[in-house]
Image 1 (cartoon, rainbow, N blue to C red):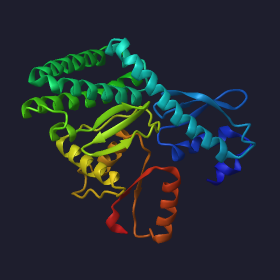
Image 2: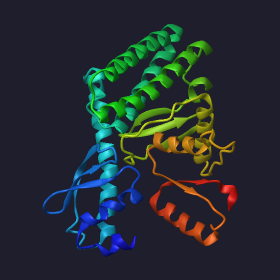
Image 3: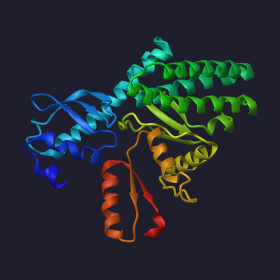
Image 4: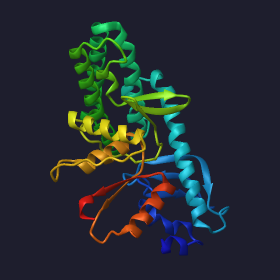
Length: 307
């Protein structure tokens, strides 16, 4: 904090501390005038900003241009998702997946999966079986790409996409087995569904709905989704819908923290994990909540029982 505030003359000196401020930003792309044109994730994925951020206009106040970077990041992720959403029907899927940032591919792919399922359900079992066959074909195409020559970045994107695609296919198989005939059946409502509504992404599950956060998270792998993961998601997103928090409980190493972090990734929210110790008093917690309230991030207090 002190170093960020003391280095007001040279904006490039803030870069080592960006990981503390943003989940997915490791460095910034400065030009000769010290304007910022793009963000780089720790995997070196480049996200071009919709509007450049000028550090000279902030006249040395770091918090102003860092706030500008945050606003530009949210606007850019939303804008790229919108472009990608309209580009999806125009290109073959195996070409489309390589043209966009990893996070955008996962989000838009989930939106079109939701559209596909909701169109297939009214057509009965035959409609869902046809869609299941289509999903299998798409998955085979992605696997064929993975076996070919790819950049490290594309391989990471496709790794995460395969995880999401396999779960999407399994959900459709379950819907066929359960004989779901209506989009309001619990078997379908209880899945994590993505919708493009009023130029924005909404994520719904049962009766809960949350707006997609548009936080840039870089190009990171995703957790394999098991029935238990889904049940945790349902409980946590239901709690969030009621403006409450959740407390997953279970033995060590079963994935409580990872599941919470993965739900944050699914909703594009920054998630700060903090390991609690007995030195955490009410003043430290107060500071934590002040920061969370101003940043709009989630926090995951690990080993909460130690406090």
